[in-house]
Image (cartoon, rainbow over all chains, first blue to last red; front, side, top):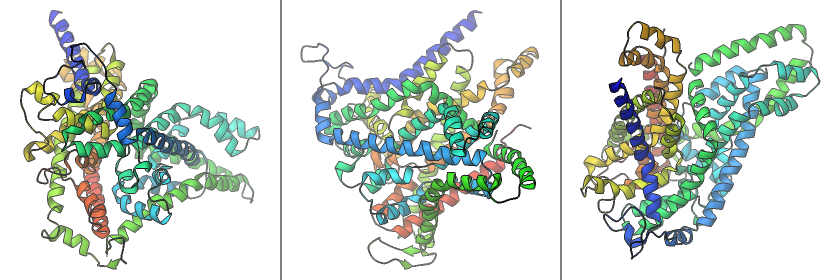
Length: 283
Length: 317
């Protein structure tokens, strides 16, 4: 009994140690971002930000400087605009296609579905160069639209929506059809509300993906005013890798960029946790 | 459990219906004709998207891979030269094989260790731990942070002078600055980032295991370790397979961290395949070479996946 208790204590100690390992760096970074620039660039400075007299004091200098230096206001607007629009398109069109593949018997459905699933095997890298050329041809190079258009749908999400719709009992929809409801009405008024938990998951993961996306904006965006948060911070990070002087701005900008996503995650964590698990189990 | 099984099961189930109706209502304007029309209407947006942003790029990339093209002047057809030069002309493309080697090393350093750690921790969380959802949430935090912000944080933590890691160790090591440690450091960072995600998936797989299996094993006198190896591991094998495959495919395309933190250095120690591809495409404007590289990557990934399906048992039957 005693050995059992000891092993339980050790287990919890380890699990908490892991929390420190995985979350601790964020707290450390956040605290450091409120320090005076010279303090950040001093070895062995205290963990809490302090002033000359040793009192705890949170300074916003780095944040003010970061907003100014990176034009964070503009980047915020751009990023939220891009991620929100892309997510809205994704939710609607992926559901539409997923519903058709789950419920509607049109000719060639199975062949098409298999073809689409096969395309999941193709890494995004293959599309990088040609997509840049296509976006160029469409006259969208270096525009916010270039960040949205190639990502308005997702094969993987269509697959997940199809699985979701397949999981619903047909009776509700059949009853509506007998009552004379058209196909779109059945989809919109019956199937979509039932799929709400999955839609929340897909909405959040799509939003996060677009918010975090780095390589594509790096390729397609040239003007700083059309940049995203990830791109702006990215330029700062690659500069900081060789120049420690930029650390204070970089820390503040990292906190600013991380906070929205962490908040969204904490608010919707139940949905996300369930959705990711079920997506993997189904996929 | 696997998606293929799922797909074929559901499709055979659905096909019963139209066949029955086809016999009953063969007229035009019938239920079936409406279904056809509405079905196409529903997937039309996707078909357009698929054609423009998936199918066309795949074909374009394939065609460009046989061209020499710098985007400015007209492309010239060079046959298989791009492929041949990449593979057999180390003077022109000295970094091709090394970058593939670096990528394989990176995969070997990050994927197996990361999954073993995740399995062990999931098993710990699966032993009636109080506050399980707190731990799951906390462990997932690195995953919801932009990789760019994670890179920023790690650069700061790894700083030889002011970094937390060197402070804790009492050293002044430039982990990212030395060829021996740079790639391993990035691998550790990858494990750190993905851990929460892997735990989430593995834990939910463990939760779906039938409790009675464990009860029976207990009655038979199996201890915790035996129950883990005899019941838990075989049951979650399909999910481990899933994580290995997606992890390997993801690691093959690792780019952001290397671009941001090391730029492929020092001495090409972190020059991954995708970073090298990016350089060819967007720094040297060798679109043909980059496209050939992307198709070679596709082949490698298909091969790895095939190996996976062929040799890793996915189900316990």
